[in-house]
Length: 141
Image (cartoon, rainbow, N blue to C red; front, side, top):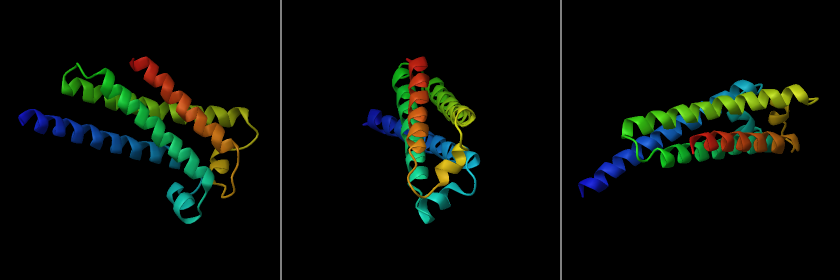
């Protein structure tokens, strides 16, 4: 029974870290888009904002999973710090990818994300977020 309780403690700590990283990712995307991201999604019902945020959340989940999985043999403290570091790197690299895409396309990506009507560029941004997360995961493994 003590092993189960210890495992539940680890799971709770990693889950809390995962939620914190999702919040950090949300704030980063909110900074990159005009207005308030939550309002664009829940009030104005922007499909583009929903697609991009969902992809960012999935990308963060992939990074957190990989960091926990591949650092499982390390001590809890080391694995927890590694998970936080790789998660933050993922948020940073997703933001960089967002800005680089904006440099090579004719539109401001932040404005595209906030459009209510579907715009295919939201899929490009979403794919870039997932691709960046896979690069981070590859560096973990």
